[in-house]
Length: 393
Image 1 (cartoon, rainbow, N blue to C red):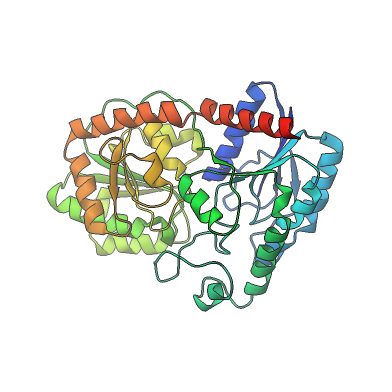
Image 2: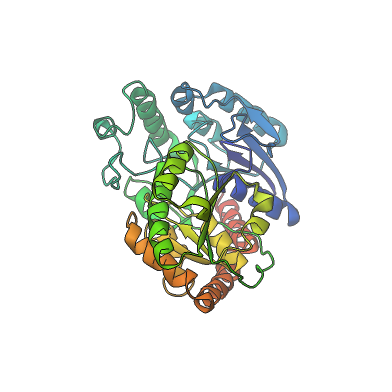
């Protein structure tokens, strides 16, 4: 088959882009001809995996182009003419490519692999500025709750209206988790199935050695809960002074987190290592006893958790969103209430103070990851979906 993958961004610096690259490479390995169309915008600088690009921006005009991006529609139309794909799969498209691509897809077998809340939430988070979860349908309430600005509100509502009008261009909507499926269905979207993202089967990490180390990987933004992690780790250090914390990532909250680290007197116990390339993550995290995923928003999936499990690393994660599905409490890791730094601290201490427990949870995580979260398993399910859609067509 000739398959065209669409994604907002083409630098492999976040989960959606990693999944897009793995899907492309896995499909190519099975004999499919696969190309990627993405915008030229970059959240974090890096090399592009796109075969063809359209205009994109991260400037203040992004809200407007995310509602209507004529460049995306033109580029897609030309790619359909020249590449003539048998199937198009949109991964993430509502930050850059916009619903302008949907009328172009009419008549072309197309799938939407939903990895975010963006089609049901203008911010993409389903998380309010006061730190609580959003339980209402998008609309004027988004402005009232200050989730969007008055300047951006009209464009974001136009985006929503165009999505709802043209979403039937997709012959199937697939989500990355049952949690995201439920949220999309509550907004009148028909979801065909859940396909968990895959990750590469890599060698298991080496046996754990001192010092007991926790790690975090991700963008340093408020919804990721790293401030909660710092407060939790301060409690861990009171009872386990040898414990260490590695922070891999960068983002707008970095400076504030650095100040908080000082206020909590964590000193040299915390290492903020900045952005680490995907190819270097396994080696950078080889010494971690546990990966902390303290998100305070409902992560649609949380790829870092399954990547850690594949390495054989225990995971302590918020009992929220897709994380509650991938991490099995008391088996491959521990669940904690989102935003509860005391519960997070206790869970981290349980793992960091007991090497045997850390090894046991990590080994069970690796077994689960190899059985349920491999790239091959993901490709198998997508090939079955493509076959079903082609047969129906």
